[in-house]
Length: 275
Image (cartoon, rainbow, N blue to C red; front, side, top):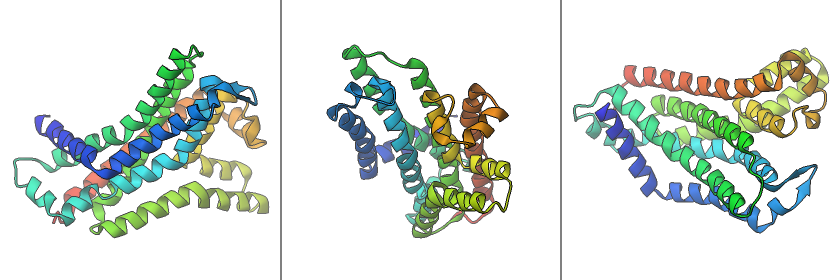
């Protein structure tokens, strides 16, 4: 455990010194500051006001920004060390492959998760100072959702980094996965639904396998338990399971996906040439 924690600490220090971490932190912190400057907490739209509306807007933007930031900054974690011969140098010490791999995973997870949570904490503290009602239940549920989403894309990024030797190829694959999950899968499934080539239940089920999609719907359900903004799709989801069960699934499923991809990446990392 000592070597594992040392690798995680070194990766954390390296990430904090990097320019991308500064940009990453400013993006999420800047979003919260921009919302306060724009007076989001003092307005009301469709019944949402105060910190509830701010968190709703923040989480909807995070769905788009967080995955691509995690993929781009993490996908070169191992492949970049291999290109710069850092991996060869690190393994010259009495460190096992498992300690190196999982230490990098833990260190990078702390790096990508803390700025997101810190921005939400700033919103809560500012709202408390202003005397606003703090939606603690929504805050803690969003904490769990962001935790699982970060784990999902971190696992995918480490899986890519474990078998791709070139950092440029790794970046290309990461960007393609983000575009596919964000846009292409929705467009393709909507076209199939309109053409009625497959059953609606099958198409919705495939859509729910997308971590970004299930995260998005779970975030909406915290403010709109009836999912009225989703139209007929809501009937299938709510008839299949309750809102509480769906939120729990939306936390557990991306978490499991991330750990599976991370474990697969470690398996590939152990069996292929390291340098």
